[in-house]
Amino acid sequence: MGKINSTRVLLGGLLAGLVINISEAFLNMVVFKADIEASMKSLNKTMNASGGAIAIYLCWGFLVGILAIYIYAAVRPRFGGSAKSAFRVGILMWLLVYIQSAISMAPMGLFPPMLLAKGMIAGMVEIILATLVGASIYKEEPVA
Image (tube, one colour):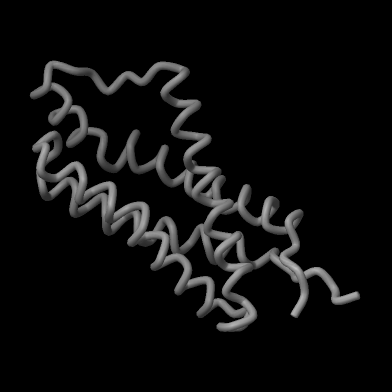
């Protein structure tokens, strides 16, 4: 069993993060835009995010991508270096990041339950796809 290839984790994670960030931008600025605007309006807020907020969201997307590929690299010796393993990691990340986020927001009533449900479904597709793409470039370091 080789060591985790940190360079490939970083590269794969950045690629996964790019998929996440592109997906999030499309979902929030196109697909769910009207629903989010209506929710924000009911709170006397706007959907306009500052540059600092956008930077935080982008960093978070890349961090989630890197973490997903790190976990993929860690489970490869047990589950193998396959798309099925990457899919499993994607489901794990969905549960730990996306579902947890929706569950923590639901009781606050900030967003309608249907919007949260749609976001969870879109998030599942997003993180699985991102993990599959990032994992596709991961390779183990050779054993010395």
